[in-house]
Length: 67
Image (cartoon, rainbow, N blue to C red; front, top):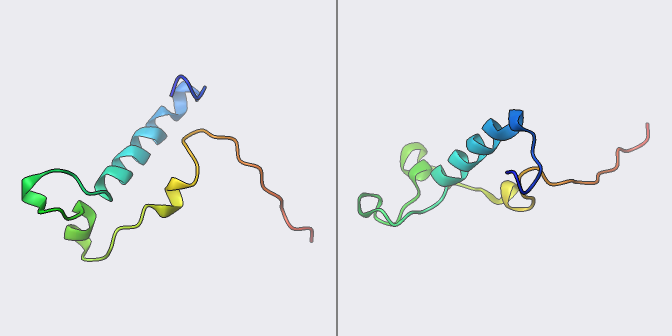
């Protein structure tokens, strides 16, 4: 987070993001049997694709449509 230049007050957002991605990703834990923790709890397929496009504290350019 220091390398990205993120302000200290945003570091808790990074930890929340990391915990979200970890709970939606498979791990090498025997009890999970190759499944994703969020899928086991909710019964629905976990999806992290919206979070994979950009890194934490990365500049993003966007354009607002004119009214």
